[in-house]
Length: 208
Image (cartoon, rainbow, N blue to C red; front, side, top):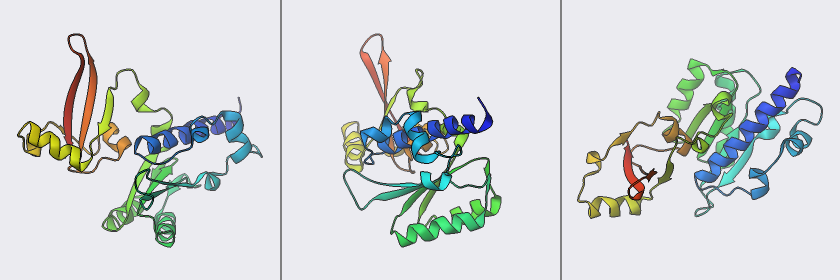
């Protein structure tokens, strides 16, 4: 397999994982996009033997709130700089989209990272390296099922056990699972593990 063919396979895997991530976060994703095979991906995005990363960009909306939309970007350059990040922010403004994910090849420059931080009060822009999305970590046999609680479910949980949220075990926002689900500080995730005695063991963690 030559380098270009390997690149196509690599990006197909990344593209598949990011669609699964969006679906897990509650965004509307068509089943044919989740099931897209390598042949279909190649015909759509790499008909000339090289993937057009700009064509990979897509927008999704939440199932329960169509106004909650997110753009997913695939920059061409291996090192993403300020100019590209500002261009993405401008596109988010033009489309009235409050969330975005940048999937970069090798790195994002420190100055570009600073821009992402500076706009965080208005726009939520995340970043993942392509290598982080080659496989879906939630499909690993050692990773238990995670379910992000709604604010109402969180409140019910705390009342039921008479807890303050700070009494819950914690998960850092930088944790790979927290990043996959896009957990924000204050959100609670329900974790379900198999148990030999009770069939299933349930625990909760606070993103903090």
